[in-house]
Length: 222
Image (cartoon, rainbow, N blue to C red; front, side, top):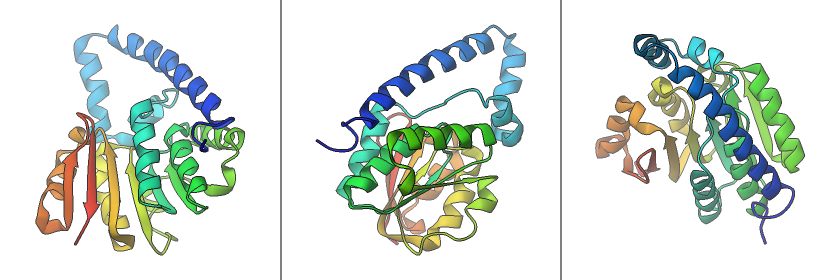
């Protein structure tokens, strides 16, 4: 047995993924009823005015998939990661997977970030319910500011799952702290072509490949 597949974490994740499917499904259905032009304008704001877009979408979980969650746990365990930075905590589903791995690795820190106060509060409550709060720090505010200071001396693993527009800038903030061989996992990376160009160019010090249609995994080698 491990932390991920044992109570209270296992039951909590099952419940949260079910809640996410219902909540996000209803909101996406509502969005689908908008005229096509209005819907396109709303979605385009994610690339032009991310604070407004994600503020309006604050009721949405927008979680990783259960498969991606298990993959994150496996990667963190396999690399013995003890220092993890997460951009885009939302309601904390990915954070729970990462913190479970850190617990099973013997301890450490998951440093999360989200600018939406209601999401930070929910994520903290979920982590307390999972019994993992002692391994997690969630910073509230714009990650361009909250992740620009007081970072761990060495970062073993990064999860990018916030506004896709900012992926290159967030990675630039973290690069000086990345350990040799550190992994960077980017969810919905196809929505950030500048980021993909950055990590797929060997001259920038990464080896990178798509793990699924939505997830890009990169290793810092330079």
